[in-house]
Image 1 (cartoon, rainbow, N blue to C red):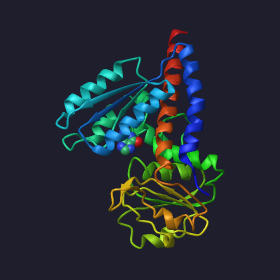
Image 2: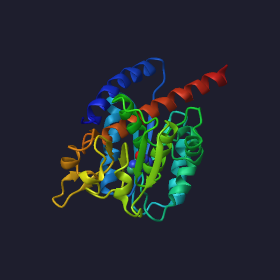
Image 3: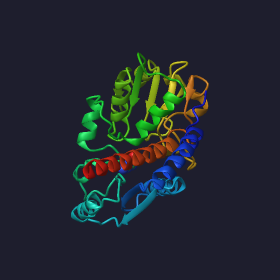
Length: 289
Ligand code: GUN
């Protein structure tokens, strides 16, 4: 089975469009600010895609572009401006940042109620505590959970193996699967005999940035394989971390690249922007009451 993230994201976008229209009708204008510093080529594409998706759904999107030599104090000032701006519901600072800027200081500077990426220590803490509050979570893992649910792949009792230990994907992904009842094994690029782990996975999530790291022989027959990679092969073609052409004959369900995880990440970002806009509005109503 091919897990079609593009098709699912289109379906979800259509219902979100109606929701945005209804929110606007009631006087709420969902607004997202994306800040991008420097000229990382992949980030430029991601940010442009986010902007186009927001516009398509009727979400107001502001992109703030700053040069490679932008300083940390300047970025903190810009964030502060949007923290104070009550018309803004979500603030996203595109990562990675240039090396003169401390990413964790920047993440901590974003107001928690506008942390649309779910990267703040508070929101990450809620995720790892399996809190029953509503809180944003990193958009790529969130999109993957939505895909699994849509395709009736229940993680409960399954062995999920994560390959990749990033804060954006691997770590929150493991927490979400654990919260959903999976047995989770974290592996990464330093893991010895990686294949001995991946071959035991019922659900295999691969997010390393290494093109075609996972081959058909590394996959348990019938497993669900989720490929987060967006890599270039030797001919410059966009490929994933999984050798899809061979892996698809072994896996029970698999995401293609492109058209798998990528579109779902952006859809999750839009869902969370709407969520933050609704919560902010309820807060205002309560203050008025
Ligand atoms: N860079 C790659 N993925 C992401 C993401 O989900 N959010 C942000 N802010 N930066 C990223």
